[in-house]
Amino acid sequence: MHRGKGMKFVGDSRIPANRKPNIPKDYSEFPGKTEAFWPNFLLKEWLVGAVFLIGFLSLTVAHEPPLEKIADPTDTGYIPLPDWYFLFLYQLLKYEFASGAYNVFGAFIIPGIAFGALLLAPFIDRSPERRPVKRPLATGFMLLGVAATIFLTWESVAYHDWEQQSAQGEIVPEADVDTEAAGYLIYDQQGCIACHGDSLDGLAGPALAGATLTPEEVAEIAVNGLGDMPAGLFDGTDEELQELAEFVSEVSNQ
Image 1 (cartoon, helix red, strand yellow):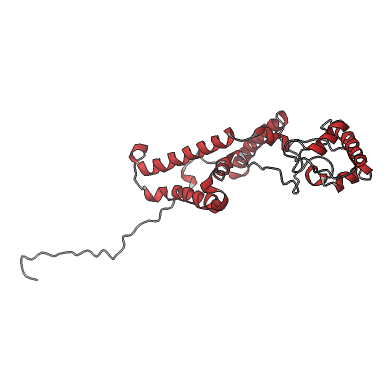
Image 2 (cartoon, rainbow, N blue to C red; image 1 turned 60 degrees about the horizontal axis):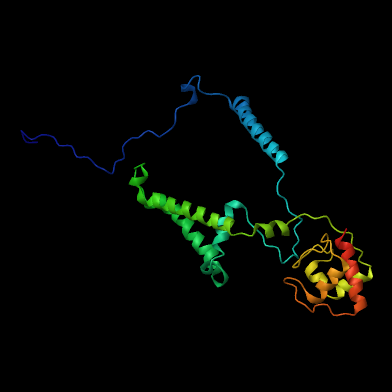
């Protein structure tokens, strides 16, 4: 080495620095701030769970759940209603662009895009700012999702026929129907059973059991129809009409 020349050091970035693993401190280094899992911590968990369970059971006793009648898969006139947290999706399927031929678009594509955008929000906006005004993309996605959910839920509740909903699921006592009676045989032969059910509790048509109809009213409806029921459906003799009217009236007044 020539005189006057200093020694030079060259660093190599390929050589990794010695780093200690990111291991949390042992609990023994925090005296007085730890507790045993069994039984101390687990006992607290059980106490919290017991308080919640007792409170929940008290609510169910004080306010009976709005149960409906037993599900009937043959009831084609029943209109199901989802729980409140799915009402916004239920309302979405009522619009023309999301129903009918576009049902797949409303059931899969639109919800998929919406939830996919929310999942991608942390990757699209990676700003370290915590103030909403400094994170327009994340804030905009969240506000749009919340506003759409609230609006669709409100639309579903405001324009739903709640009277029909409660009537179709109303629990009514089953009538004592004599399936061997002559009137029941006429009831079956005339096709009444397809709309009003084999127990006269209603299917596509209204329930006749408990309707408190007179024989004259039954005969009038059977011949001339009522509401959605067209006239001229009954095709039988006057004797059969009288037999049918008396049978239906007897069941409806039980």
